[in-house]
Image (cartoon, rainbow, N blue to C red; front, side, top):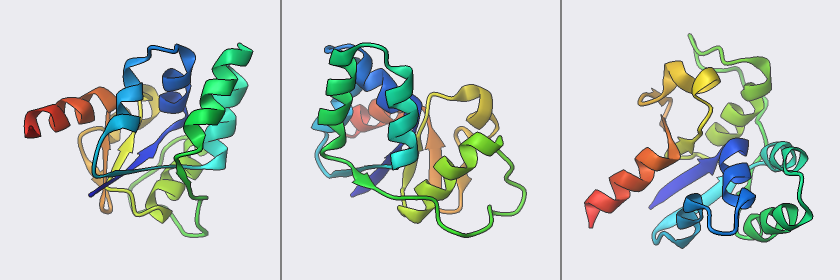
Length: 133
C-alpha cells in the first residue's frame, strides 16, 4: 500500500475546481493519503473562494496528518526553508511518495528518493497507477 504525502500545491489544485483532475487521488484504492497542517494552511491561504475552502476542508477529512519531526535533513538535501517542514513531515509520515507540483523548489529531487520517499509529480503518480491495471 502506498503512503502519499500531498504537498500544499496538490491540495490547492484538488480544491481549486469541483472537477479537478487531482481528485482522482481520493478515489484510489490501496493508498493512504497524508499531509500536514502546515500544507493545509498554505493551501487554504492561497484559495480565495469560500467554495474552494469548503472543498479543501472536505478533502482534508480523509487525510492522515503528520508534522515535521525534530530531525536533520538527510545529507546533501537542501530545499528552500519554506519546504523543509513539508519534506520533514513526509519523512515523519513514512510516505512512499511525496506528491508535489513545485518543480521550482523540488525539481532537483523529482524522480529521485530522499530516504525511502520518492518525489514525484502527481500526474506522474496517477499515470504510473493507471499502467498497473
